[in-house]
Length: 379
Image (cartoon, helix red, strand yellow):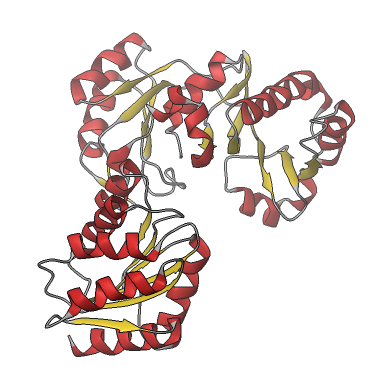
């Protein structure tokens, strides 16, 4: 789950990291009031969950209240990288003397956490690495032991960080690491981390939380912005399904992420394009299967559905019962492969239901994928 900049900054501030003064606006009138409160010179930041807002025109400076109002009128309702701007964070304009970068992210390759520091910032970290490789440093933190002082000194030295900033940057790095661990985050980042006359300030903030950990952080779950997600993905999240919409026409339902990915790969191999990734998980009940099927069918691009179930924890007869409930009035072809626990019972239920319907029961994944692609081409 990605947080908006203003949400991440609230959390950073709560933990002691200095942030600029600012408030969230949802209307032009809000912008006027906040700009007046901040003295007129402000920065307007579109709150959409995408990177590169500045280059895309989503961040604008205003040197008076009237200018802030006029620019807010342009920004509200505009489309920024496919997202409608509905919220603007109005922030005081700072006298920035230097821009830097600090962040932590998961480092799966090294089975740890990557701590990254750069004495230059304000651009994508990949761009920093390309243009200023000598000013970026990285160390891998072992989560068992945590962030050590010697690792911070290594980052400061290798990033060519001026010594007058060492004390403040050290404190910020330690705080960012605590935030990452406490909130079980996948990414915590300040870019740019800026030097001003009042000290070092987080001019921007990113905080991405592991979805699987949200049940331990109920306070953060309430911050999720469903308006930024695809409508069907939002519905799937609410129902506990793992769903991602794609641009193909073959609907996919499988139990387990690996099975879903393998099913999608087979569809590609046979010349088709999956319309979605949908994992109903292990032990899915008839109710879950019915909800999953309704979700797939809500995509108007779907021409055929391929259901690939390998029963382990998930019982094939339970899946079959859910499908019977969900497919009573379906008009498009459905291909079903059931194997594993209670396979015989599941197949009998489906065979009885499939009489006189556009229903196809197959033995193997390969047969199912090939059949689904062919039916989609004929539809």
